[in-house]
Length: 322
Image (cartoon, rainbow, N blue to C red):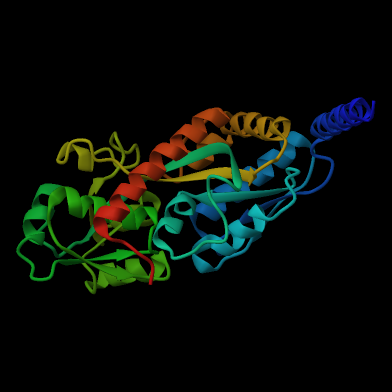
């Protein structure tokens, strides 16, 4: 009899919990929603995150705000979301560095795959291979040939260890079988200034950063890392036209803490897709990005595939954060 009563109480509690979750999902959101971006204000990631937060607020009739929590290569802000209440009111908007940087660090206080629920892939950013204009380089073939004549290798900037720019640079080095000297910078601004001044030789970063310098003739973009030629640089070939199979993107996505009710994450996914089908699509593409609507499952599979690629590049390149 006691066992039957225990089972009955357990089933009742489970049912009540399920009903409460359904009710909260149906009324979501009924209070302010926070997007945490784990990098300083400014830049493409911040701009896209703020645009998305504003659009979701308009669509869902609630306030969505952005809170920048920079530090420790993005891990401080990401950890705040990992430890947040899984109720859909604290979300992470981040770049692909979120999934790759931990592979280069000694320890991270969370697991990308266990502590987060992928909500939506928002956009992909093709990168540009930008070269100092005085180098005798006009394309990837001549870049590789010239690099092999430089003792110690050409000097290429990176924004942070494990970033998309870093990994795409390392993948190019591996695929082209030439030496590079990696020069870390704390921001894209100083890196571009040194590239323009000839202090460094190259920099692989999202197209939006180099586009105007290329058009003004201050530097030379010799290739883009996307699978197809970029709309903003139609005359510039892809790396893959010289090295078949090569492609690399930085990408931006939205994550929730693990154990967030699926009804809430599915609602958020649908709202993100709705936002990407409207005027926001033009705002994103004007920044040289590609919008990427899709389901949560699409995002989960994409993330897993990208992380496997990153691990291979990091292992072969023996990349680690200092």
